Structures are given as structure tokens and as C-alpha cells.
Image (cartoon, rainbow, N blue to C red; front, side, top):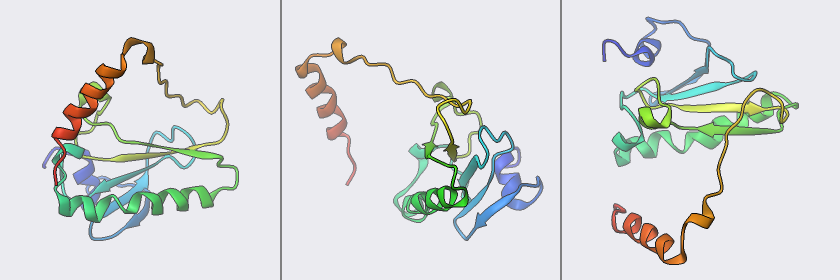
Length: 142
């Protein structure tokens, strides 16, 4: 992709602070540094989001997530936890349409990063939850 910022980082057109690179992925510090150590992992193959991964790409990219997570955690004894965030589609806050995973180290509850999960459980009956689960299950790929 000629206009993809992450493709330009992969090919060196745009500089980055590299953490790790192999044939399949590039890992580098996010320029925003939401918290110290905020890191991005991107596949070298341009795919817009997780929906575009084929089995081969998934087998090469996804197993590296825990490896990167452990390295980040070990890099600073003050890191208490880590958010791994993958946004897919504009409605899900994806702003760069080249698949990527954010690794956001957490130091304290007041470290300027927050995610909110609202409890909507009272809005669903058991039957409605079973129907949702059934529809998802019917669309699982082998």
C-alpha cells in the first residue's frame, strides 16, 4: 500500500524505534507512548484488520503476542500489568487500517489509560444469550 504509514515504517521510509523484527512482524514503540513502553506489533503483510487474516498469517503472527508481552513486562519492574488492544474497523477505534496490536504497559490505576466495560447483563435473558452464542458458533470456520 503506497499510502499506509505502517507499510512505510516496515520499508524504512518512515523511521521508528524498533523493538524486534523478523520475516513476519515488526515491533516498535508507538510514537504516542500512552504509557512508557507502549509498543505496536504489525504483520509485515498488509492486511487491514483481523478479519483479513488467513490461517497462515495467523499462525505466524498471533503466537508472538505473548512473547512480546512477556518481554515488555520483564523490561521494567514497575509494570504491574499490560493491556493488549486490537481495534478492527473505524467503529472500533481503528485509525490506521493496517492490522496492529497495541501493548500498553500499566503502572497504576491513574496512569492516564482507561477502558470501560459497561455491565449490560440485565438487558439479556438466558435465551437471548444462547441465541447470540448459537449464531456465533454457526459461523465458526474449521
